[in-house]
Amino acid sequence: MNRKKLTLAIIVLWLTGSVWAATSITSDGNETSKLLVHVEQGRDRIAPEIYGHFAEHLGRCVYEGFWVGEDSDIPNVRGIRKDVVEALKKIQVPVLRWPGGCFADEYHWKEGIGPRSKRGRMINTHWGRVIDDNSFGTHEFLDLCEMLDCEAYIAGNVGSGTVEEMQDWVEYMTSDSDGDMARLRRQNGREKPWRLRYFGVGNENWGCGGNMTAEYYADLYRRFQTYVRNYSGNRIVKVACGPGGTDLRWTEVVMEKAARYMNAVTLHYYVRGSGNWTDKGSATEFDEKEWFALMKNTLGADETIAKNIEIMDRFDRRKRIDLFVDEWGTWWDAEPGTDPGFLYQQNTLRDAVSAGIFLNVFNKYCHRVKMANIAQTNNVLQAMILTRGKEMIVTPTYHVFEMFKVHQGATLLPSELVCHGYGARNQQIPELVASASRDAGGTVHISICNLNPNSDSQLECLLEGLSPQRVSGRVLTAEKMTAHNTFKNPDVVMPTRLNGSTVDGDLITVTIPAKSVVVLAIK
Ligand code: AHR
Image (cartoon, rainbow, N blue to C red; front, side, top):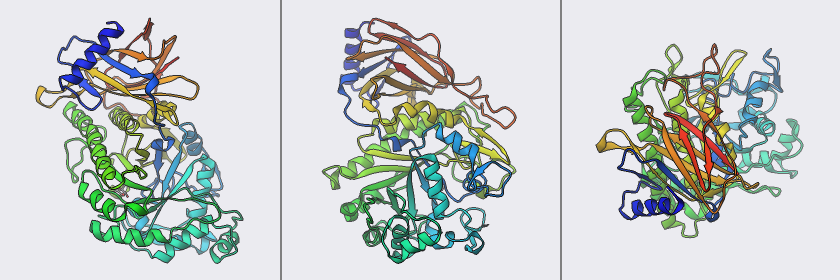
């Protein structure tokens, strides 16, 4: 199909209304899928923070995952494991959110500073009721961020904390003055203040963060945020707690009452298969019905984000406020034999394809979605890294982040996709989900997920405004949809070279294997 015909086919599909966001499902099963990328129409930058992470005091995410202590025989720098930091540096972590999660609204930061032998011991009531001896606190977290060379995003305590406590924390971290908090920080060994970019005023305050109504939280938000001050040239992005899933009323109320006091509002979006919260399903043992359900539920993030943005636009006409999806990912039953309060789960090719869909959707809304943080970095939920004593492996989802890092800071290129449907006729979803960007060097990257576990997809790409010279690609797939990496076999799912892509005049032809994530580089 030549350029004219392809453009025409896409226009016809748009006009006939068979449109799913920027994707249309073709009715003709034999047609090749088609992607039209408008290279010269790129306008919005994909904030690197869309590829952000989240680490909570939960199970073995912080303790064992990051923190092993200075005396550990696991190689570490000032108590933080070296192997984990090295692996995370390869995926260019742009921002790390801490200390929770639900934990944030029970955390009292003053118990986590000063000599470790004198720190407080708290019961982590949300997560397994284990004792947290506070050996990982503010200094350790900000040290970790410096090792990773990433921005720090701290979630403050509204649920059980005080305004004074929150104000003091910000002053402690960021003030270069001769005031009490800066003096205390110096006594504890840190002369210069840290740079702190993001501060969240509470977490899930509709649930674990205090069971508040939207109205009550909005009022509290206004009060607490007043005392989140800028010191010594540090400028904080103030983040209000948004809804979980599809609770649009929460967004509406918080925006109506508090929009002028915030720089960003959050959204949490967890997905599973067809199970419910008490029976979420196994991370590794599932059939195609469960695979399909996860793909469908993941695609639901598109509509939820669009609806939240629509509400935000009504109360923020200048589009000043950003949307941060600061918790997202898959949530399965905890791995058998582990503490259910630790939320440890394995991570298969299914999780990787779901992550690829999420990231393509975030790219699509990058004009408003300026941060997203997958839950969570190590050993919890959809983790990047799994550890067992001295051992460490990376998950299929880690590889997706590594492949997609080319989008960080690049310009989103508008695109239209026509592809086959996947699933039964009355509940079909698109087989492919894609996004495209152009980096500072002019290379165009296209990330594509094939949601169909049964068939490869032939794709023709036309890049309007660019004559492609070369195309190369990487693919993440495996023989089975349940494939995952283990300590015994750590490289079952890892990216390989994608063969067979061709450039013919303006057209790029590529095969997207069944159940895969592909990233193309086009020059
Ligand atoms: O990520 C696990 C938990 O999920 C977080 O603590 C909470 O914010 C959410 O409900």
